[in-house]
Image (cartoon, rainbow, N blue to C red; front, side, top):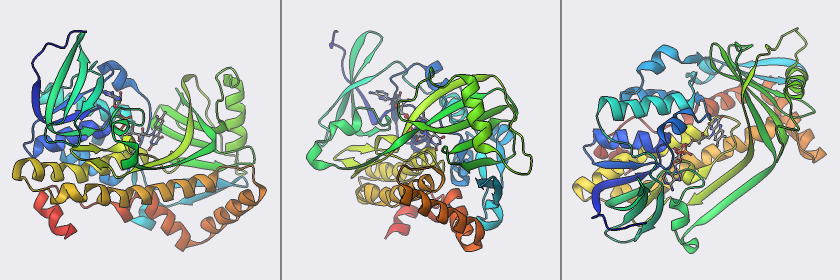
Length: 411
Ligand SMILES: Cc1cc2nc3c(=O)[nH]c(=O)nc-3n(C[C@H](O)[C@H](O)[C@H](O)COP(=O)(O)OP(=O)(O)OC[C@H]3O[C@@H](n4cnc5c(N)ncnc54)[C@H](O)[C@@H]3O)c2cc1C
């Protein structure tokens, strides 16, 4: 492949057009910092990728603040509670009353669509799709660059700073020498089988049901789309889980004594995702910064993954603006330390909630988790703590966006 094109230049090269990369680009745009987004996949693929869907209020506020909240305000479902089921009994956790904030249901792919439309159609800026980054050169030096492929040619983009918002399997984290990274990982012995069903949700809030066969969970993406999950073995396949078996398990695991009924509908999407927790620290190597899933993965119980990615870039944007525009590195130097506080909070909460609602092989762990769950549902204090962590109020960074506001808070 020819490599003869002259190098291009920008202030921030962002790898990845997931939520982290797209929101960072928008925040940098508000700070007047030039940036280029390089995305390996095509636009249609990125906009159709079904993943998370439960947004903390801090994420919703930020989407409004950057101008990407118009459709969300019209179409999202706002929940003031969620439900825990155990022993076929229903326990409503009133998050709005207990923690003072709701949770908003709006699919990640819709967030991504809105952000791309804002950048491409409204601002007439580019997202370079079909542009996989192959290599990051000199990340710790003064002139880092990325080498990417696009239109059958190899290109070089020189930047002041490179942000790897390229997900767990991206190139960014792997560019950092092993000796400079500490990596923590926990692989759970189970996976989540997820389906999207073309049927109205059977409840107006999310339900986590702990059952002896494993977790059964009801979520939703719209008034006509249900998102349902089952705890299954790692490596479970579609062949092992035909539609009838999926529905039979969902009915059994979500059953309640008060006659509650689960609506069935055509399955329009099926996936199996292994459950893991992962953190790489620090989240910076020289002029290369990691954000979102590139630096950390949480188990999906508790819906923190997307919200965590958003928090990272909320911290990163003013830090990069100060670094690039004022040559002031104080915020950038605190970026990793600052983020790791909310990252470890989210890891703790997501792992705790995972163990609370899933079944385990170890009978002692099983009995302890059940005892804890029964304590949570019977004590207002325990419910309040759960609700605060669920909506994320305890760890949300204030919505300040200027570097001086952030610095004043940190010093
Ligand atoms: C199957 C699945 C289900 C999930 N369900 C939930 C859920 O229910 N709730 C929840 O909170 N979280 C969930 N998550 C997690 C949540 O979706 C992520 O935390 C979120 O996507 C993180 O955003 P991100 O921008 O950091 O990374 P991503 O969304 O992964 O975006 C990274 C982007 O980088 C691109 N990229 C990768 N390599 C390169 C390269 N070399 N060059 C250029 N571009 C590259 C990718 O194509 C991608 O578009 C789920 C994740 C998965 C995988």
